[in-house]
Image (cartoon, rainbow, N blue to C red; front, side):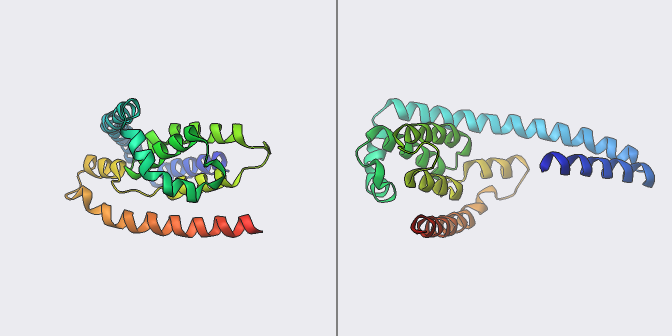
Length: 190
């Protein structure tokens, strides 16, 4: 669907620029936008590298084991099907920690790894297990204590207070997690 919508937007924009005599402004905005996108990507790359490195170091130390133990009561309640599988619990906890720190880019590969491990344990390969559904719900809600990526974007765009987003993010992610979790439980009973 998007591969049809975007070309239409582009064609309409170019047509409007030609007929309204704003072709030079369109051309200038294209070059400005591309340079802004590259600058933003480079600035975010540093943040992503830093937090991915921290997650890798944490994975090699006992910190992840301690955090997994801290999250175990929550994981056992949310994922009752995998109570005995410590590896999956650790993968889920690493993903949850990355999401809590606002590291969506670091959480994605960790989440994919956890989903692959859960799929191996899934007896019905063509249907998602309840644990897999709950994991998707939690990742979609992405409860964050420190929305690192959003703060980095706001900082790179010159925000006077880039951390002002923290409290609204807490409210939004908690509401999303509660809403999605309740819907997940309703659909599982149907």
